[in-house]
Image 1 (cartoon, one colour):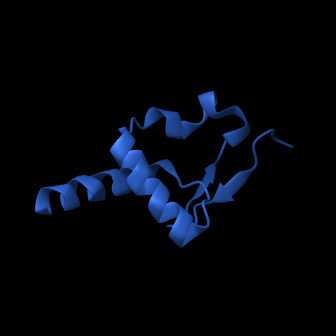
Image 2 (cartoon, rainbow, N blue to C red):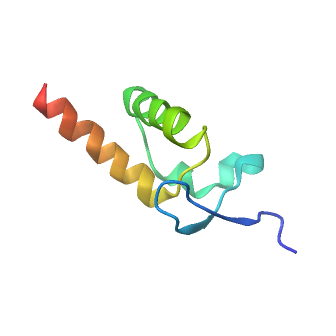
Length: 73
């Protein structure tokens, strides 16, 4: 049995391995987010996904969504 169990992303359903118990080795650490981007994503995950971890692809999509909305304001 692996130390980190695969899980499905609550946003897209893709399978990924969250390493929240060893966050320095988690794949999400490769996605550099600013404070504002992190706050934006946190608000979405808290309300829409009960605070669950998202896959890297979704983190990057939400990062792009944040900047697209920022351009519109």
